[in-house]
Image (tube, rainbow, N blue to C red; front, side):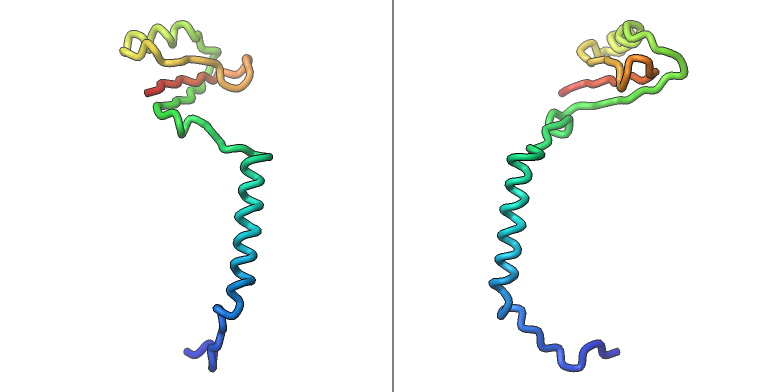
Length: 95
């Protein structure tokens, strides 16, 4: 199967165009990170474990904390996830 009869592409002749495009994309991405979006510092950089729990009924946070202490995870953070009326908890254990 022959796709091109005489493949004669001069990529090096266009190297200035490719380098210019690459440079513009690099500068634009750096400006985007520095001035608009920032560097995302989330849980990925902290280390540890996150567990999202959804209950059928409204959970008792203090009871969950007591259960965590009994399991040997006294320093785990237990908090509501989303709004206060949701039945979801976030448990975070940092290393």
